[in-house]
Image 1 (cartoon, protein in one colour):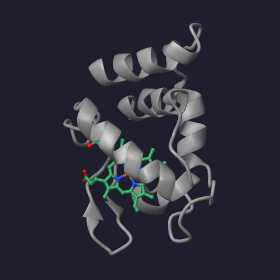
Image 2: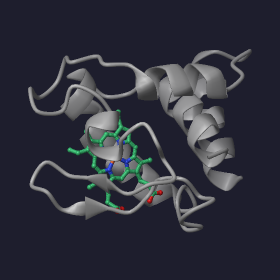
Image 3: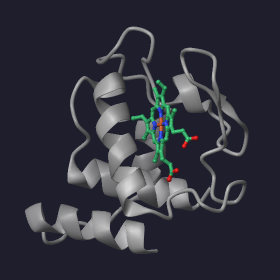
Image 4: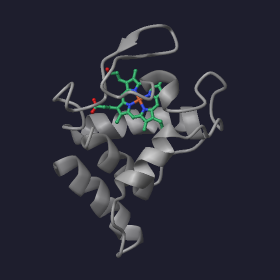
Length: 112
Ligand code: HEM
């Protein structure tokens, strides 16, 4: 997929031997860094642990499932994915996700 190729290429700029890992992506997504905003300790705070189901933003707004198997447009547009990583990673991790983390997250998410 174009989005994964793009994120992986960005990560390889820092580490030529980098290979995206869906397992590392899953571990990060399911972890609870609690290093950003108090009301968003993890990705699953909003997206839940079942990516084929709807999630919920903090204000209560429904978020459609992240899984491409449920919503085919997910992870299809690089600009959209970058935009939400740039917003959601600081909320959860208190910092941006690195290129390697982004590639791992995409590898996990596109397989859902
Ligand atoms: C959208 C990942 C945490 C709320 C997205 C998208 C990705 C993503 C990849 C864009 C999907 C697409 O349409 O292609 C993540 C990751 C998170 C995280 C990896 C943890 C680091 C959160 C949190 C919230 C949240 C904590 C709530 C405050 C949203 C919303 C959208 C979105 C509102 C867009 C709504 C929509 O397109 O339906 N997220 N997210 N995310 N995320 Fe997250």
